[in-house]
Amino acid sequence: MDRLTGKVALISGAARGLGAEFARALAGEGASVVIGDVLDEDGRRLAEEIGQAARYVHLDVRDYDQWRNAVELTEQSFGRLDILVNNAGVVRSAPIDEHSLEDWNLVIDVNLTGSFYGIRAAVEALKASGRGSIINISSDAGLQGYGGITGYNASKFGLRGLTKSAALDLGMYNVRVNAVHPGLIRTPLLDGMEFPQDHVALHRMGEVSEIANLVVFLASDEASFSTGAEFIADGGESAGLAHGAH
Image (cartoon, rainbow, N blue to C red):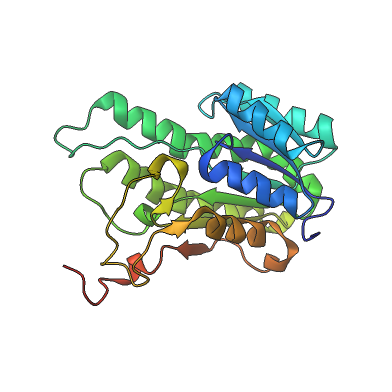
């Protein structure tokens, strides 16, 4: 497969879960990938699994200098940067009257400020590419409210706005910026757990491959006229309550 041959991607939060699947999928379509994460052992193992087309870099997205180092390593390793996937994210659960200040700051710093840092650090390399693609991994919680995850909700709505603003600023450089809004996805963290999805149109959780396929599309030239857009893969959750929901 060669939909991404010659392209180079930097992915945050890529050592496991959705981010790891993105790295495998992009590499499988011919891209070179740099895996950024704070989980060094998992990240190095994934880079070894993918092979010569992959590198690992320690990346705490809250640290702008680490972002600059990640971009520099990407360019040194593969000569360019075409694709940035802002995937790193955390969630803390508590109703707003119990949501700690520390948890709020952590979630906003990782999910929103971390994505801004990534764009800011990578933007010159993406401009030089002439065909750059920034893919911000938001959430169904960036489209509608959920009780008990105030900081996460706010960060994902913020990422949606960041996506649109960046798309307007960078379009003149042929750098596209889009957001992906997954619903509940079956990741290794959910192994053995069941979440009733009767309220969702497709009545099931999503699979990591289904989100990775969407990321590959947005990274590729097939999505060359898509920017500032929201790509929703939530089984219909944001459409409303499905028949049979209780």
